[in-house]
Image 1: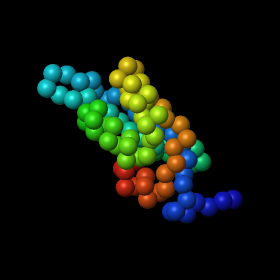
Image 2: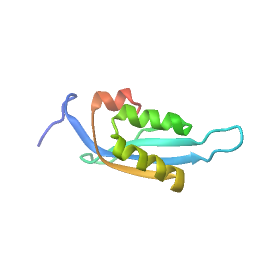
Image 3: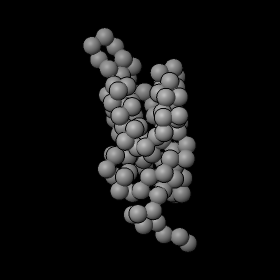
Image 4: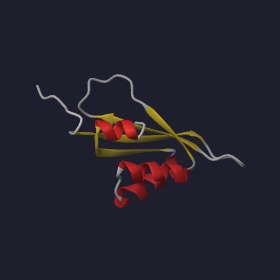
Length: 99
């Protein structure tokens, strides 16, 4: 059995769902979550972001590369959701990012 320390990366996926659509005078609201692959399940923390610019800022803070960032934002615009696989974060990063 392998134990994970704070400094080790956890690999998982970032999932984004639109919670509320943009309306006149109100920006869309998005849910951002990180689901590590090597866990036994349980609850997942959801970070709420208001506005596409704020969502983009969070994805950049997570470290999503430009080649994956724009297609993900395009998916959110078109379908209201996206999935970004194989993201690596430390436990400290997960906490700092609110994920």
